[in-house]
Amino acid sequence: MKLKDILREIFTSELFMKAHDIQHLKLNSDVLRSIKPYLSQADEFKGASISIGDDVIRTSIDVPEDHQFKGVILIHSIELTGPHYDKDLIRHNDRRPTILPVEYDANDFTPYQRIVLPYCKESFIKDSGECSAHHGSTYDYCKEQIHALLDDMIDNPKKYEQKKNYGIRMTGVFNEIDKTQKKMYLNLE
View 1 (tube, rainbow, N blue to C red):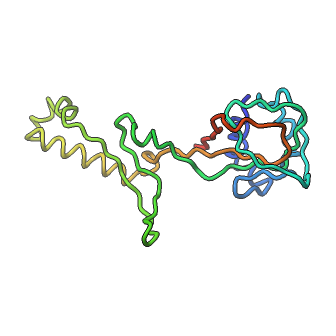
View 2 (tube, one colour):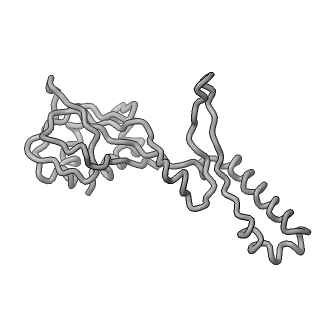
């Protein structure tokens, strides 16, 4: 089982989060001690011996994708970093309508969100064949479809929001880490 799958189960379990009073998506050494056998099952720790502790000298790392830890490692904490959004998904979202993450105006720090509503008149014209008889013209049909989609986006924003991916950061003592590898991200939704 992958480390991110184990962490997804932990961070999405309301019962676990409440029982251990976990806040800010961080697992401290006390919580890690209770789940050490579970963590040891992660593929990333197959070649490693895990210890949990409060060592004074620690390093924080962003866990790389498919990294294999080796030797003895001492884990102090595991936390999820702030949400990351895939900018390529925003640009190439397969013509799906999307509500982008909150952005802030640099001048007055006013929060705002953008709605991406791809529009292809030809696809509406293809779909409007039999509908144009009931709605009058193709233009009216296209307009109705866009209005309906926009209404649905405003009424159900969660359905159209881009998924959040969290980075995984571990603090402890580790052997050498390859920082050129792609970072591991976790989706909690």
